[in-house]
Amino acid sequence: MKTIVAKFGGTSLASADQFKKVHAIIAGDPARRIVIASAPGKRFAEDEKVTDLLLKCYEDAAAGRPFEPTLESISQRFGEIIDGLNLDFPLAREIASLREHLLDSPDRNYVLSRGEYLNSRILAAFLGFTFVDPEWCVCFDGTGRLDMAMTRRTMTAALRPLQNAVVAGFYGADMSGRIHTLSRGGSDVTGSLVAAAVDADLYENWTDVSGLMAADPHIVEDPKTVKYVSYRELRTLSYMGASVLHTDAVLPVADMDIPINIRNTNRPEDAGTTIVRKLPKGETKYPIIGVAGRVGMSVIQVEKLMVSDESGFTAVMLDMLKNRQIPFEQCLTGIDTVTVVIKSDVLAPYKDELFAEIRDRLKPDYLGLTENLSMIAVIGEKGTDSCDANVRVLQALAKMGMPISTINQGAGKLNLLIGVPEERYEEAIQAIYATIEEDPL
Ligand code: ASP
View 1 (tube, rainbow, N blue to C red):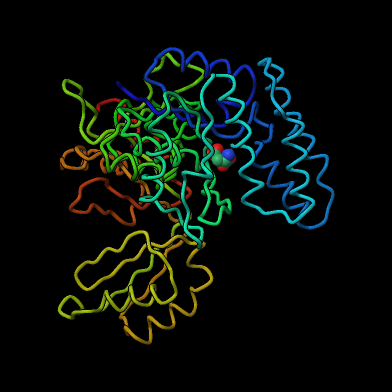
View 2 (view 1 turned 180 degrees about the vertical axis):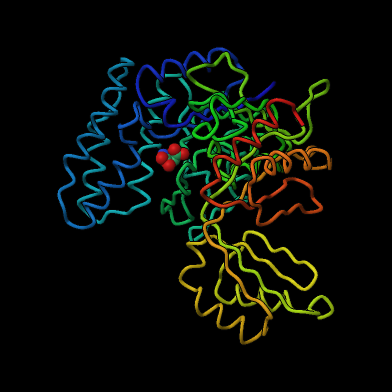
């Protein structure tokens, strides 16, 4: 029998009305047997996520400040959902137990996890599914690191006998029973772990947008939704700031070739975006799937005559970064030059000492720093394969007199990375998007 693992994000489960939409989606396909739930998210722009309210409760309790008003808001949020669904649910008992914990010796992860715990129990009761507490099947080691292999085995065993289940997202526990949470947005990761554990045919990730957009809608008006992207392209898109899916959610399902389908709970008729390794037969995708980027970059340029004949020059440069645990975004080497791109806020505390050491150890002929840069990624496994596509993207930038500080495309040909001044970032994105849109490259 086909199995779909369906994860619903916070906005999809923010109110009783949203729960009803989720019910209709689940009822729409019997293959949707395993559901992952987030805590209630925002119902409107100024609303607060329950996880943020829980965090506030914890911080106030830990600091000995009153937390009761915030706990009351949390109780009200769940109360409204339960009443709106006409459910018989022991909310007062659950809130009393949380209050006791907060008064006693509050644990941050435990408190944060209660949003997913309660929402999943409510959803399980509403759907008539079995509630599965990840305390027993999402496994962390003693240091708080997720143990993927153990999780997979335990989760498979926990879910195998069940026809239907709701698993709470975002948390798990170590061998001693201590609760650990994933990073924020981590229910996506739980969903991916569960999909891998049950060898699902599909991992559906239901949210409040109809998939991934080919560009940031704050910069480009009404960008198109991408129908298919590969796992590798998605990694780049997320890395460069497209925040539809948690970055760590790709790995567990990609390993097993399980497609991820991003869907919109408020527009279930939209096909959304499907993330695959290989396109289904008969489907095509644009060679360039989108353009994304980041501002706040710095570029260090080191030049020394005849350095191309010297071995180890770049290694010494990177060693200086490694010793300070400074991650770099790109490293480009040319004849007698080494260029390293680093996030400006990461570089700032080390700038002076790093430059002094570069001067001392590498004795460069020229050492330069360019700040306030942005990095743009033109993403597409096929697109960047063709020289023509690159030329057209660069031509679009040249036409507008855009100064380009770096161009980088590795042999993997996944993206073309272009450095442009921060103050012209949006203009550059718009111009590149127009090239993709008018004439899919
Ligand atoms: N509720 C958690 C958060 O707000 C986890 C999640 O929604 O995935 O980050």
